[in-house]
Length: 283
Image (cartoon, rainbow, N blue to C red):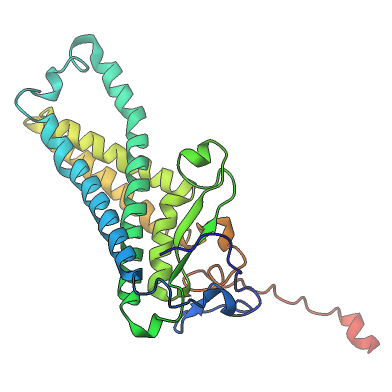
């Protein structure tokens, strides 16, 4: 499982230049990534437990958002949403305004929980398979890195405390890099996730509301068009922000091979200025 403490990072080796990750790159120095036989036999059980836990959490989140919540709001004892106390009579404008404010928060929270749970599940499953492979027997599979204060999402960050990023891959490949990038979207406080979460929240809340109101006749067609437009804007921002995802990373990853590897783009060297004509003649 993950190792505690602060293992020595691989800064002097492997990160001198940009790596395309066609060959594995290590995030720890050679002396820090070696492991002993103690606990290696139990390692698959630890990763199996983590895989099951994160898988169950991801399934619960998806079930609540797409099944349980709509089903509960549409149950017989609740009745149509338009007849509820929060939307009837003079409360209609206030109810709609409240939903417009709550929707971005709902979308952002959904994005945080989903990216962390799905990303951690994929990481745990990857390490589970590696722990069963004899080729990985002599090396650590993952470690933990400490975050700076107010960098991570969660109660500890709100309180101004540092938190630990777990399941960081020791052997960095294209797959583990993508999985870690996906997890970092929810672990690291960033504007991109909140923008995407806002649009997803508006799409989700608006769609659930008009389907459970329920809208009828021409109103249902208009609402369906608006839902499609909101979802299209969400997809547009997902695609438009694709270059920003690799740069969303814990501060502990800065200056390591994680930052200087695919799909992060290598920094372009500044173009050399042409020498003045007078300097050439002086030579």
